[in-house]
Every structure is written in structure tokens, then in C-alpha cells.
Length: 231
Image (cartoon, rainbow, N blue to C red; front, side):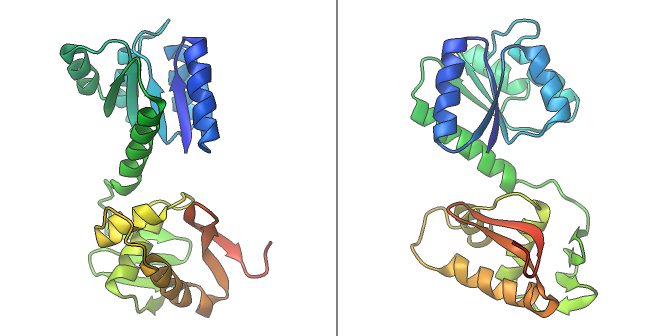
């Protein structure tokens, strides 16, 4: 994940940044609201962790500005303002979650991960078609084609491809696939995901001589074009 941490307490931001990096995430730190706003206008993040008491532009105003600009990044407020009214105010301003200081880093990490996962699975896509290069998915007709050639996909394969097409270039984890395609919220310890990915690849890639679904070792899969023999 790419995380934006908006916190003016340097000791706390260093602690959180170190922990997130050790967990394998990329972290950008902003120590004031105005800088954070400018970053969000030009960069893309998976989650933002925002303190409410910030110099220049406070956290509440920052989140309101982001939502007014139609920036839908998931936002977790991390603040010492822990009263019920404070929480309600933060959520009504556009925050997605609220964690008060002091906090356990393990809980912060779990909440960030949950926010990112919900963001990937949530879709506001209303167009009848999804496309990536020469791959087209017609959601209304439940039909898939590549280079104009019909792909005979089973229902689960169709849903897997739909998830990839909604988020091209984004790593889709095994957990996300289980939740989105099978509505399973635990690991059944089977090869069901791998089996269906293999079947989808045989139909989507093999006849066309290239690779679209990349395996990201230790993370999941990503829809990204790669010509045969490349790398």
C-alpha cells in the first residue's frame, strides 16, 4: 500500500512511518494540512492517516477539502480528540475510520489494511462495459471478448476478470479474491483461487500469445500487459 501520513508530531510520525515501512508499505509524510492537500491533488494514495490538530489547515478542514474535490481516498483519523462528538464530527466530515491516541500499532495497521481492502472491493462503476486494452467485459450481457473473440468464461472466472478490470495495475490479494468472488471471509486452505486463475489465464492469454495476469510473489496478482518472452 501507499500510505499518506499527516502528522506534525515528528516523534510519532517517525514511529508510525517506521512501523508501516517494516510492514512493507510505502509511506509519505506531511507535517501540515496544506502540504497534505497539495500531495493528494497530484499523487495517488491507498490510505491517508490524518491527525486532527494540524498547523495551517487542520485535519477536519483537510478532509472536507478532499471530499469537496471528489478525492475518495480512504481516511483514518488518528487523534487525541476521542470524545463521541469528536468522532461523529470526523466521520461526518468524510473520514472513514477513527482511532484515538494512545493506540496500539497493531490495531492501526489492521485498520489501515481493512480500509484499503474495502476501497479495492468497493466500486462505483456504472458503465455497462469494462475494458483493458483489447479485453472487453460487458456487464449487462455477462459477456467477455478479446480482440473481438468471445471468451467462454465460467461465472467465477468472469467475476475474477471483472475485479482485475476494475483495478488494472493494482495488486489483488488472495483474500480480496476470496471475498469478492466466493464471499468467503476466511482462508479455506484450498487451491480454489489458484485453480480458477490458471483456468482464466488459459482462456485469456494462451490463445493470444501474451501475459496479462502477473503473479506478484508473496502478494497476489496484478493485471498488467507483458509480452511473451519479456523479462
